Structure formats: C-alpha cells, structure tokens
Figure 1 (cartoon, helix red, strand yellow):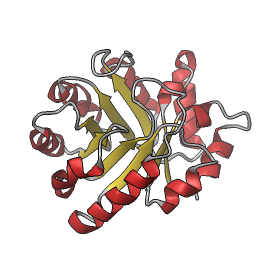
Figure 2: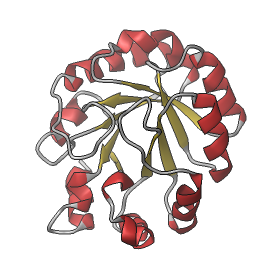
Figure 3: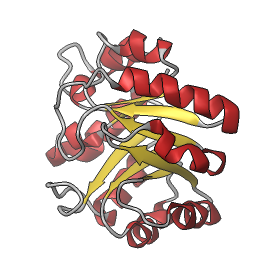
Figure 4: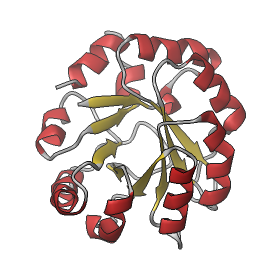
Length: 214
C-alpha cells in the first residue's frame, strides 16, 4: 500500500517541518487538497503555499483539485510538476479535454469520484487516466468518518480497470486508518490518503505510516 498523507491536517504554522517529517517517515506522496470555496464549502491553499511545500518535499506531490474551472487550476499548479493532478468528474463537462491537458504538461492525470458517484461514470475515461481517486467522505473537510460503501465501489472499479487499463491505480481518500486499511487492500486499493490519522497520531508519523503499509 502506498501512503499519501494529506497536508490539510498538518500544522500550517509549521508546514515545512511537517512536510519534511512525513517524507522522512516514509510516505510515498504528499497529498495536497485544493479547495476553492465553490465546488466545496471550504477554501484551502493556492500555488504560492504549495510552491513552498514542493521545495521541502522529498516525495512527489499528489494534487487533488476540488474546484470549479479545472483547466484554470491545472495551469496554476502544473509548474510545480506534481506526480498527479486529480479533478472531480461531477464538476467537469469536458473531462477528456482536461485529461489531455494534464498529460501534455508531463503530469499523470487522475479522475475523482464523490461517494455517491458510481465507478461506471468514468468507465470510458479509464484508458486515458493513470489513477482514479474514490472519496470515502464527502469532500471539503478533514477529519470525517469513513463511508464503508467505498469498499464495494473500489471492487467494482477494480473490475473495470482490469478490463480497460490494468496499469491504472485506485486511490481512496477520507477516514482511512489502521482499522479499515486491510479491507481497502482486499478491495484492490493501491494508494490511501490519510490526514488526521497520520498528523494526529500520538505515536508519531512513522508509526502511523508504517501501520498503513500492508
């Protein structure tokens, strides 16, 4: 299992230290939640802050756009050269166009599904993306409880991926911890995003990350 701690749960007063610490603790990606206050009822960080994160991160960035006007935000964050940029299928009228744009910039395109969106909604995009992000909470805030139905959705998505694009990865974001990680692994998930569990773990970042690497 690959681990992408979400810096939404980090201490923003000591953000550089926290980013260095999760990288040193063995994370695989640094997950960046970008919210615009329109698509979701919260406003987070822009490219100036993420540029600072990129300078201290020793692991690739995984940027999750929860925004309107995806193409505009792709242009904002592409210069930081993240590994992934994911955007929500629920917001985008022309997903193929955005996918092609992301790939043309040398970045791996990914598509995101809200908890109510069936995996079949992206079946005909799977051949063109490198990852699908399944939300296991409603997007917009950290610290929410895991929605168990994501496990069945992950299994359904895995079957579609095996048919259309076996190299495509599945990522799950929201409420991930050491109690549900085995179920996620069994369902075919490749990457988990963990914010509160990692940054709020009393035994430290390394302990939290290691407990998810199964």
